Length: 131
Ligand code: HEC
Image (cartoon, rainbow, N blue to C red; front, top):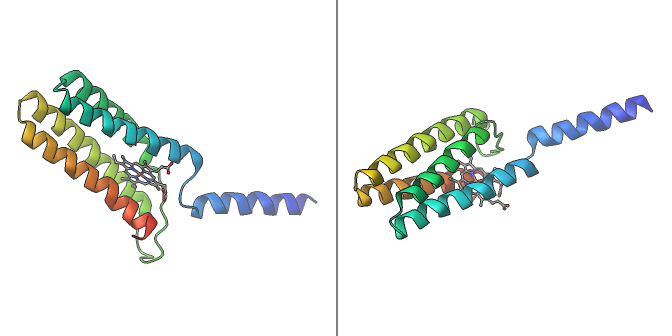
């Protein structure tokens, strides 16, 4: 009986370790989608406070994705943990850049940085969803 229980606990943790993502991570992603939409709203309403709110949310959420483990069967040497960590740092830095550009009235630069951030979101999703 004990053995069976242990086996099922092991199987569950193995599933989580190898699985694409758990529910908590999904919530992080949904919140991220909201955060980037807030930044976009700030662009359209030309509101620095709104852009800053979105940027702060993105940066706070990025702290959660650096622990993501992503499956990539195509490349067994792919270090998903390192990738997620590097991407989260890079997206956080770009979010700061975007806000500084917006504050400096370099709106074109700010929207270009925004688009680079979105491309980074999609790049990770491409790996996961094998698009
Ligand atoms: C390091 C990898 C990674 C990065 C970077 C990343 N995501 Fe995700 N995202 C995931 C994973 C893993 C899932 C869940 C797997 C799936 O949907 O196929 C996901 C799913 C999502 C979903 C769907 C959630 C749902 O409930 O179906 C949204 C929305 C999303 N991400 C938004 C974003 C946004 C916005 C960014 C950029 C600011 C971003 N993601 C960057 C890994 C990432």
